[in-house]
Amino acid sequence: MHRSRFSPLPALALAAVVALAACSKPAADDAAPATSAPAGDAAAAPADAGADAGATAPQTDTAAAGFVLDMGRANAYFATLAQIAKMSKADAARSGDGEEDDVIAMDASESVDAYIARMEADPEAKRLLTSAGMSVREFAHTNSAMLEGLMAVGMMEATGRKEVPEGINPQYVAFVQAHKAEFEAKMQALQAHAGEQ
Image (cartoon, rainbow, N blue to C red):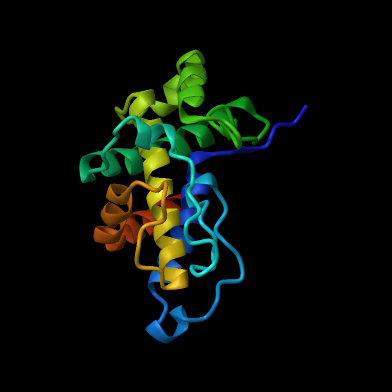
């Protein structure tokens, strides 16, 4: 039976494209209504900033845990993503089937805490997630916080909304806004590295 899953790297790439593309739009374009809201539970606020503005998104496990994003964690996170991609390719080549394992993929409806418990119990998954020095818990919470910040910034920039949507951690949004250039460069480097594999 197939489960709906996503891996950290494609999910981050999607969020980064949404956020960075929105941030690069001219001011005149920001007034145009968005055709769709970014996917993901970190962007639960509606795409139309004027519609149901009081809607509240559920607080994530990561925000509830008081997790704070900083560049040390962000740098370690991107290093882990690069290492995961490298190791997954190598494992696929060794297996002979050319298929990359999705052992670290997160179920679409899975909470961060449940994901951490599952990864800690799976030696192969834990090996991948800790390959660049992060713990499973640190990786999972950084992944959640980065996606929350990126998706919220993308929605805010696309709709011209200034206030952080309710249920979204303002620290994640401020952090992403302050380091958009660094994250764009890191995403481009990851994508270029993936293309060389």
